[in-house]
Image 1 (cartoon, rainbow, N blue to C red):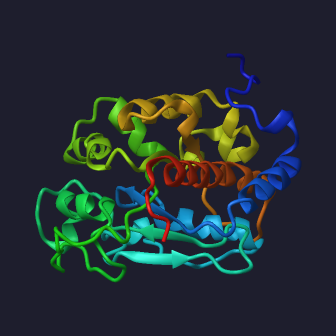
Image 2: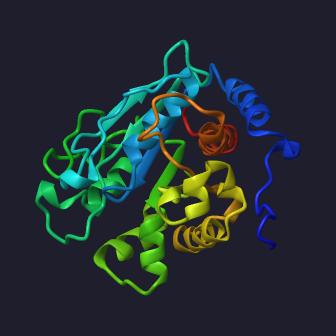
Length: 277
């Protein structure tokens, strides 16, 4: 792969502006089919930022739909199983996105130690209701699977992937490696790699380089092996964090995982009979 050769092609190699328009039209097709997406990842991965970025792309303005955890403040971010519903003005309607507590290095059981694997399992099975406080509220393990997601989105930072590749064995890496076994087979799954601008200077300089950067392709390969998903289900993004205006160059990498998550969710509804109610 040459320095300027893209490892992933956008639609017909069109410009980012043209590709953004194409992807938004594709996403709109799903309007009217109730679908549920659930984000799982480590603390500081940018799960809430990704949710906000999705809605920013949809509405054309910076959105604050989910509380973000500032890395400089520490902590574990989301404590409550939060449901964010799309609105009538969104390009993806009748979609529910669930934000979960992050995984941490800790093996403890206290709520500041990140989500427990047992809670994660119940969440993927749809037994946890919105408003549930992780590691605190009890779960009816025999309850109905009303909130089971149609697609799980694994969210991991590019920096964490490089640490794992460089031999940094930790409790967190072990938890991440076990995620694919926790998610039921009937649920689709994709992976989103955040903070790609933190590991690659060419992407820092221009987000449009995200599909031609060798460094980014390297972490895509690492994520594919870590989560057991094909490379075409791994999506590098840069979330809206510092920006104050929506931009097509940011939007295209964000729209691709959204579209695939919706496509795969609909596939699972049609093939496996998973309820969309």
